[in-house]
Amino acid sequence: MRLVDHLRRTPERRSCEHIDAIAEPAGPRASACQECGVRVSLRVCLTCGHVGCCDSSSGHATAHALKTGHPAIRALPNGFTYCYRHREYF
Image (tube, rainbow, N blue to C red; front, side):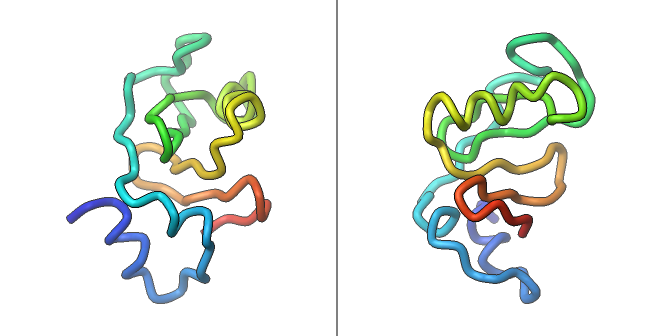
């Protein structure tokens, strides 16, 4: 099952047009933060697969989203999805 299919099948998830617009979510391009090498609390960009650390570390996932305009991330390995535009977890 593709990641986007799983997201759409989660009954408690509210709709988000930014996540829904990503037809084929990108898989992670790395197993650690691509900027600092941290290996915990990682986030993958659903648009391009960039892997960055969470805001509790150095915030490289958020920095990537702000720089590129990519709207959504997924916590690795199988965590929440977050839309930066809505500032909401799904």
